[in-house]
Length: 421
Image (cartoon, rainbow, N blue to C red; front, side):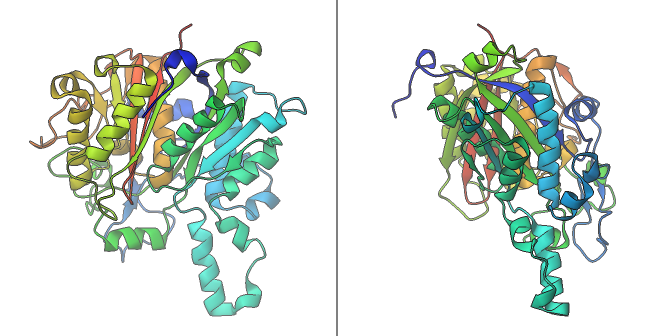
C-alpha cells in the first residue's frame, strides 16, 4: 500500500479531551486514580446481580446528567448519549474551539458506540410486553440508535460538518478517532469531535456476556477481578465509559492559539477474518494494524516508548496481543517497551474503551508517567513482556501506541506523538 510521507500529510493534533469513567467524571481525576492504581470495579449497584454468573462491573456511579443538560433533555436521552454530551463539554472547554458561521460546516462529529441505548431497548421491550405498543415512548427509537450521540453533540455545538457513528465492538473508540483524523487529513473538516460512549452495564449485556463465559466470575473480590496478562485471568469485567477528543488541523489550531496536547501521527485498521469472538491466536491482524500505524507515523519500533494495550483480562486476547506486539515490533524491541492495560482498573467498556484509552495515551505523553497494570500476580509464560506491574512509572514517552480489538475481528491501532514543530 502506498502511504503519503508524514511531511506530505496535513498534521492533526489533539486540543481537548473529556472523559466519564468508573474512576471519575473528568480527565484529571480519572488520570490521578489510574496513576494511584485505584480500581473502579465493584459489585453491580444499578440492578440486582445475584442471579448472574458475573456480578461486578465498572459502573459510573457519581454521574448526574442534569449537571450537564437540563432535566427535560435528560429524560429523553439515553445514558450513553448523556455521557457523550458531558465528555464533549469538558473537551470543548479545554480546547476552546469556536464554532460559528465561519467554520461550522468544517467541524465534524464522529462519535460511536458498540451497542448504543441498550438499557432503553430493554425497558421498551418490558413496556411492550406488559403494557402494549401504545405505551411506548415516542423517544424510544431515537434513544436506542448508536448514531444519536453524534447527532446530539452536533445539535448542541451547531457543528454541521461530517457527522456519523462508527460501531466496531470494542474497537469503536479507536476507529472513530482514527477516521476523524483521516477526515481532517483529506480536507473534509478542519476539526472533529471524536470518540465513543458506552453504557453497557445492563441486565441483558451482563447476562449475554456471562452466557458466553467472557466475564470474570471472581465475584467475591471485584477489585482484583480484572487481571490482564496474569496467568489466573478468567475473563473481562464489563464497564461503561465515554471518551471524547477534539482533533484539529495543526494550522487551524495554531491560528487560534489552541492548547496542543499531542499529535495523531498514525492509524492502522485491519481485520482478523478469523472468528466471531475469538482473536486470531497468531496475532496477525493486530500486528499489521500496529505496523500500519507506525508506517503512517514515519516511525520505527525503536521509536515506541509506551503501549496502552487492549489487555482485556481474557485468556485468548492477552496471549494473542502479546504475540502481535512481538511480531510487529520485534521480540527484542517489544521486551524493552512499557506496556499497561488500564482495563485492570476501569474494566472493559466495550466501544468506549478505545476512546478513554486514547486519552490515557495522550495523558502519558503530557504527564511523563504511565499507569500500572494492577492485579498482575502470577506470570503467564505466554504473556512475558513488561506490563508495568509495580505501580505508575516515570517514562516520559514521546511516541505511544494504543491498541483496540473487537468482536468480529476488528483491529485498530493509534499512534500519538509529543507535539514538536
